[in-house]
Image 1 (spheres, rainbow, N blue to C red):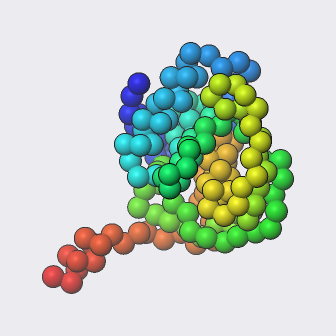
Image 2 (cartoon, rainbow, N blue to C red):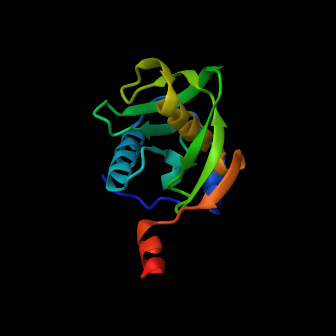
Image 3 (tube, rainbow, N blue to C red):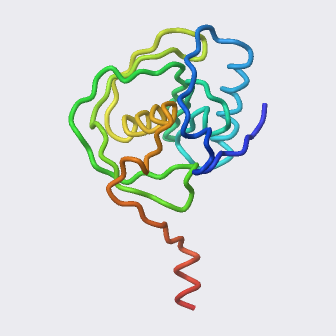
Length: 163
């Protein structure tokens, strides 16, 4: 389909709640393919439909570790266990990272791209990524819950200062 522009912080679409999908349509399948194309054109691990301008409850997470990507429609986190504090970034807020507390383990349910019910129990970075993308569907950005946010210093920035 197409690589879409990723909306940046400040775009009002990112702060709106996404619509639930009753029946998966051809338009939804196009959105899913656009999410895949856009995610794989960059270096992120997750992308939610609002980030490319669609207010639909769909996200993709791919840790790029050889496991299958997770595409979830109408996700709902049904259980949160423990806490974990770690660094997060966002394709909609490039150049910055923040420390965010998330559940250590979650149980999430939703549908896959074929409409089949999926229930997952995940931990660690995958749980963090799913929580991050689910937040996007509710108009929540990671910065809303970050303890600290700081500008990322790229290696070429460091190299040019040392020259």
